[in-house]
Structure formats: structure tokens, C-alpha cells
Image 1 (tube, rainbow, N blue to C red):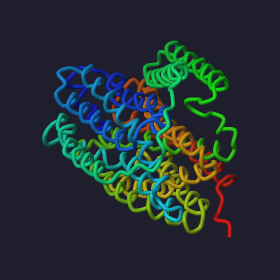
Image 2 (image 1 turned 180 degrees about the horizontal axis):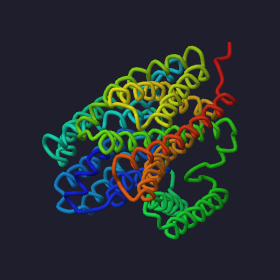
Image 3 (image 1 turned 90 degrees about the horizontal axis):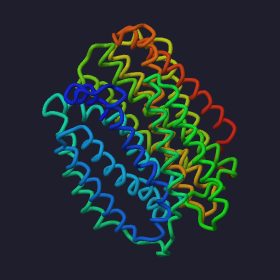
Length: 430
């Protein structure tokens, strides 16, 4: 949807900080639903959850495709987010339950390429559709895919786990909802410069987090078992996973913005520019997972994050001077590296937990994944907006300088990731 932002801003007469809620509210809905995924998985049949997720997403698509006003689009995105919040952790739970241990790394790579490659393939799809048929067809085109998915799920999903009803603690759920709403609202308003609103929202979010921790320590079945983060290795992998996803969504925003506003290209060209990188990531996901199965997590993860750093360094130094062809080449390196890394980080994190903790660990990682995406888009857009405000223009030069500063920030995060995995990522023990 990011690539359709300029079109939607013109059609509905809205500003940048308003239109970005199309992404932020979707990620907020996912972030609120994912923490209850462990309880849902225990309480309901896997196939029933899958069907519910698909139907909700289809309802959201139709709502957006037919939306007469911008608030209706946001409603549709919330419904889609609820469906995704159910489906996303379900995919990884099915892999962990049904795939032989010797192939878990490879299949987690396949699973993660779906979420990790989306920022590369999405702009291509969106750019082609927006430039040929209009933005509403972004939603119409997805309906047949959802119907195919629905049929495949009814045919292929098996029930492997025992159904055991788990109640959802209402106070914990409220604290989670307020935490994510406050954090995403605060970060989404960074680009407006309204620091009092930003600070107030983040303070409310942090108070809610403290309330969640307090409540979780009082009950026997916490909604999110935050005690797992006392496992230092799991916590390190979780932090790395958060930073990788933050960089990923920040990258997607910066590239689309840069190609259109600095290089002066259309949404279609922007989409086609990042398309080869999507294929690179798709190929390297399963390859990286196979490397993990054979050698352990250390080699593929460190190789992947190093490739990601090459892209960050290139843009931090040369952002104003890169042609579209060079952007495409550098982004291929980045997506190949991320494809090698993302699934392996998640797999390695979960293997450091006891079997009975995997559901909760998966819920924590998927929650982190969505929250970090919202933070990444908001932080990078705020850095670009700050540069534009300082120079009093939204033209190519201020945007290019802002992009360069944002990539420098992402590069620093990448260096932190490398340091984390140098310390915690392990090779395969003989």
C-alpha cells in the first residue's frame, strides 16, 4: 500500500502523516491479535482458525475495494489486520508441529520469505495496479488468491495438537492493546513534530507495559509469557528479530519514496526496480534455512546481516548519487541477506526454548515482528520529514538528504545486529 500513498493523498485530500495510518492501523490490529495466538491455537481447531482468518481478510478486502471515504479504508485495514494476526503465527505453529526436525530450518525459511519478501514484491504489484487500473484493484486482485488459499487450507491442514480451552485474561489483553496503540500512535506522529502528543502516547504505552508485566506475574496462564525473555539467548534473538524487521519496513518506505521523489520515477518504475530483489530474497530464504539445518545458525545469519549492512552503507554514503539501476543492484544484496537471515533467527530463537514454550515464543516473535514494522516506517518517515522541514521544501534534495540520514540510522542498527549474533549465534554442534 505504501506505493499508493501519493494517489490516495490526492484522491482523499489527506496529508502524509494521515495516509500512513493505512499501514500503521493494519499493523496495530495484527499486533493486538498476535499475542492471543497461543490461547487461540490451544482453544480451537487449527483448520477453524485458518478459515476464520481467510474470511476476515476477504471481508476487509471488499470493505476497502468499495470504500467511499478514507475512514472506511481504515476500517477495512483493521479487519484485514485481525485476519492476518490469526493467520501469521498459525503458519509458523503448523511448521513447528508438522515438519520433521531435520527440515524445520528450510521450511521456516520458506515461511519467513512470505513475510520478509512482501516489502519487495508489494511495491511492484501495487505500482503496476495503481498505474493501470487504479488503487481499488489492489484489493480486488487479492480475492481470488484468498479463495485458493481457503480451498488449500480446507484440504491440507491437519489437527496435530490436543484442544485445551484457555481463557483470555481481559486485563492483560487491554494492557496489550493500549501499549501497542500508544506506541504506534506516538511513533506515527513523529513526523508532525507534535512532541507533546508523541511523548504522552509513549508514556501511556509504557505504563500499560508495566501493568502487563505486573498482571502476567500474578496469573498462572499469562497471555504473553514474558518470563521467556529471561532466557538471555532467546531475548537476544528476539531483539535481533525486532531490529531486522524495523530495518525491513524502513527500507521499503525509503526506497519507494526515494525513487519517486528523488529520481523522479513513477510508482510503476519504483515497483519494478525492487522486483528483482524480491526474487533474490525468495531464493535465499530456503537456501539459508538449509544452511541452518546443515551447519547451524551462525554461518547463514552472519552472512545475511553482513549483506544487509552493505546496502545500508551504500545508501548512507551514496544515496544522492545512485541511479535506479544501482539502487536495484544494492537492494538485491539486501533482500538476499535478509532472506538468509529472517527465518533462521526465528528458528534459532525457538530452538532455545522448551517444547512446551514454543507456542508462547512464537506469539512473542510474531508480536515483535508487527510492532517493529510500524516503528520502522514511522521512524524513517520522521527522519525524512525532519530534513524536509529544516530545508523548507519537500523537493528532491531535502528528500535525498533525509533518506541518507535515515539509512545512516538503519546502518547503526545493522551494526548492533551483527554484534548480537557474533555473540549469540551458534554453529551446529557435532
